[in-house]
Image (cartoon, rainbow, N blue to C red; front, top):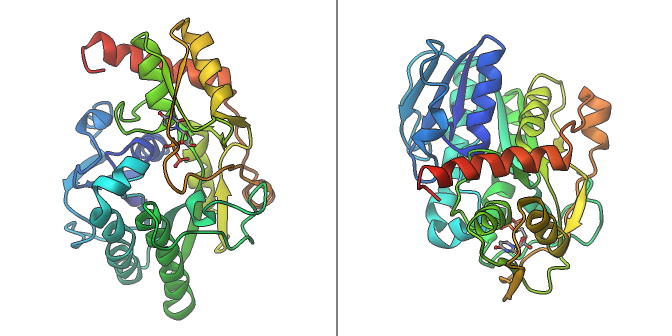
Length: 314
Ligand code: UDP
């Protein structure tokens, strides 16, 4: 198949490109490099079935030829991005989704929207099931992401219902692994780089808030599984292995041998208190569940950041 991946130079989408190329497809990555990085494509670029187009999906889709599959993965995706890139975040979810849905409709392509656990906001039910409608602050600092993705879900369902486009919606939970931006502010790159530099790990608030971390190779396998399934309802993909941020900090310090301890910092506004996916739907529909254990995943992630440090990039 010929497949378009928007945001292809980003952390998660670059791994998705790897997977799709490995399956023998032709892959076109579209990226404006607002948060993506060319380095993420180093191993893909020599592949003759891979090409990269520079462009902003919220302004249009500057790529010729028909596609069979379109994965809309482009968006800033970390809490500090939402503050620094609010309009890029809003428009990637709104205009970007519209442009790609129009293209999917014209090409007869199947479309997948990368949505997010953030549509559940600060969730009142736990773990989060897809039928839960969420608890989102519509004007808060994170709202540019949360509401853009909620709008994108509504738009995707409208194209499905009214224009009969084949659509899929994946709600991605916290993900980690090689190619995360070291300075994107998210907890996993922050803790790994602080630990490798021998600094205390910055735990926000009391550190009792929870997250559930999925290794990136598991995640992209789940995203691809959903695309090739017949499920048009939204589907969670994430790892239910839940922990507090204090537990995570202690784990990373122990794993790296960092003795600098932790340093508490103020909790950002609207930081969800807990998050854990219910993945029954993914398991029952396309037989997906995570396979990479936490220790293994952390080992591979720390190795990536260590290599960056050795090159003077951390
Ligand atoms: N966090 C932290 N220290 C950091 C960065 C993040 O304690 O240096 C916390 C943050 O407050 C949140 C959790 O880690 O509760 C996950 O944050 P992240 O930015 O990775 O993603 P989120 O799940 O909030 O979108």
